[in-house]
Length: 210
Image (cartoon, rainbow, N blue to C red; front, side, top):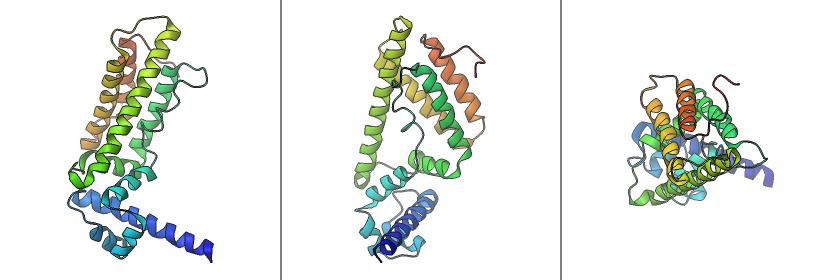
């Protein structure tokens, strides 16, 4: 009986998150109420509050349900003794492939980048974005510094600034592709990432290498 109850609760939670994805994408986050999501899921408003504190809590749960590219991929770049730039290139290739080919990832990223306004009641959403961005830039900075040390070279600028520029470039490519899809995301990202890393002396491998 307990197991069945837990399964029912998980099914309800999943139904609410599925509905949130659909309604957020149609109406935008600010224009969507918790009641809208409950109705779309065929549930009561009370069911929403049983699982989520407020709309921001539900929104962040929607993001966390999908392994978002760049959040997982930038963790652990400097572990295992491998060249962090080679690891970075391989992981970002996987990220771009996931974005281009996985419908749910694409849907959630579209909501997160284009359908949300950082108004007062969504403060926790903005705070999550800030924390994730800061953590990822710091990981990139550490990876650039370690890669430069392995190569015995001096970076052409502060590692923190180079990491911020790199992160912004990747984000911009993804945003532009989500906006119109008018270019090959995987190929374009691979070319841009290689060019950036080569420009700061951290080319992970010769051009054309697998």
